[in-house]
Length: 407
Image (cartoon, rainbow, N blue to C red; front, side, top):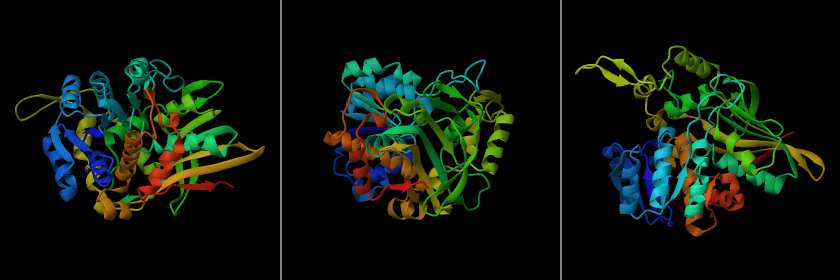
């Protein structure tokens, strides 16, 4: 399998380090807007980097990406950029006749008049509008295939197939006890994506109502996370699972809640109140005259790169799917989860826990596609494919998942 990886940030670099250890990969072209960053990702592989090469590409240049896919004879495009670039990369892969895989879906837009009650443009709507084109092409666009969304969706499918007869609610629950020494505010993932998720109206799905929205940080609950992380307050956040799971899994309710903490939420609210979360460009003075820049991009430039935080980070991160329903006439409640210890991921791969946990899942998916254990056409989420091959292979990668019966 020949892969074009677009994006050589924290997640993209972790992808290369994981994929370098697997035999299914024939060649991976690591492409980034900054060629030096792509070259650094390849160089860091050392003797394991003979199947990797670096190229420069502008992810917003649809035709340029298409040409690169064709020139490099790639079978699949793996998108490791932020969600702004989903649609040009998605369309470029379709035009080039390759498969496509991403970890975050096309952007949403709040309802103009009732943002905290009704959906406007939902996450992934832009991609699903082209589902017919992808089906006609005979190619697969596997969307939302990171950890959340991604592994969490695989867990939902597994629960529906093997653990439950009827499902009342599926709730993705994400929590961690990670700390970063020396920083008062240092998000472990892209601040651009974090703001997009946390400050947009969260979406909830109910079978008799469909998709609807609430206010940011609504419905707080304390969830007890496994492997020593413990109780963490979680709140509603906009996330792809709520838009994906109901398309393929029968459940009466689907939610996503993230353990952010009061301090993190307060800082996000302050950024919003100051307008520093905005993506609309403003004019600011520059050495050579006025320049146009978005406040969110300035914020991202001021904060530490999440990929560089591993040496200062301690603790664990947990991604998982809580499911409530019935099996053989009896009530049942389980939590399927995946925990990564930052000390382990840094020691084994040199990548901090959050980006490594995100990166391992698309690599597992690529291997399943290369062997034919997973296949399909059109635009599909992870829950549209058989879960057991994925979960077995994830364990083979040295990162097992867990299942906890909820009392």
